Every structure is written in structure tokens, then in C-alpha cells.
Amino acid sequence: MRTLLTVAAFAAFVALAPAAAQAADDFTLTIKDHKFTPAELKVPANKRVAITVVNSDATPEEFESNALKVEKVIPGGSKATVRIGPLKPGRYEFVGEFHEDTAKGVIVAE
Ligand SMILES: [Cu+2]
Image 1 (cartoon, rainbow, N blue to C red):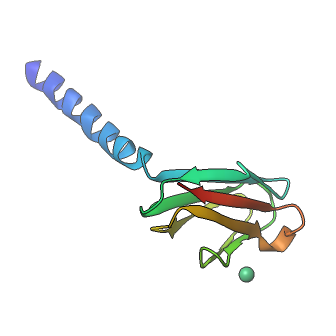
Image 2: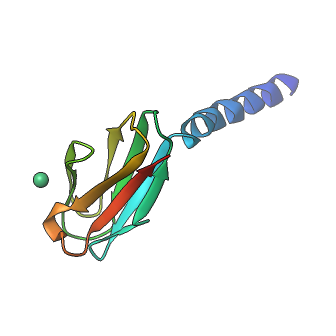
């Protein structure tokens, strides 16, 4: 019984550890109705950052930013992770290239 409890406690620790480790530098952007939420995303400057872009629309979208030098097509109903930085403090605009008139936002590194 004691061994079982120890194993369970350890398993819980292992399951939680990666989530805690990622929390600092992982961010999410969601595309819905060809708009990004949040439209302004704050990230830490001078660090490598992973942004998971969730496309909730049925149509594909392309996450694109010349300032960040990224371009990634995300099929409808799926998600993709883009890795950026380390960034100097500043504002970095991005768009959904397939719906540029509505899908736009900015990443603020600070
Ligand atoms: Cu493009």
C-alpha cells in the first residue's frame, strides 16, 4: 500500500512538472472568425518563446510575420507551434495572411 501511494505521488509529480516548466515561455493565440485572440500578446524579451496558434476556424490560416521571420500554415481545426526570439524589447506585428484585413495582431516583447 505504501509503495502504491509513493508511485502515485511520483506519477502526479511527473505529470505536473512539464506543464509547470512550460508555463513561463509558452503562449497561445487563437484564431476565430479570422481574428486573433489576444490581438496583443506580451512575451518576455531576450528569451526563446513558443507560441501555439490554435485555428478554431474551419478554413486554413497562415500565421505570418516579417518582423518575426515566421510563416506557418495552420489547417482549419488544428494548431501549430511557432518558436520565436530571443526578441529585443519592442512591438512585432503579425497577420493571418489569408484574411489580412481582419486577422492581425502584435507581439509585445518586454
Ligand atoms: Cu505567407
